[in-house]
Image 1 (cartoon, rainbow, N blue to C red):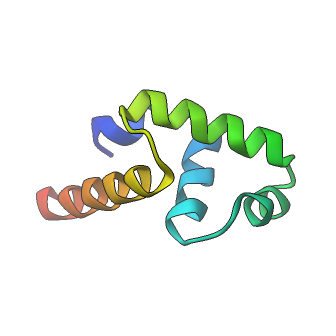
Image 2: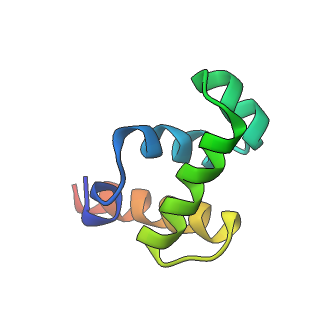
Length: 73
């Protein structure tokens, strides 16, 4: 796993995986058995750690990093 993903907690990575798959905040909350407020807090934290400002930018960056990781390994 590269530095991009190492910035995030395990729970943030779980939220990120579901976000990348296209699930909404309420769906993510239900799947992870957490509140919508907690999902939003995780996403905001990931914005800051990743240096992005939108859900789409976060998802695109995660996909690019995952692809780069597969190429390297």
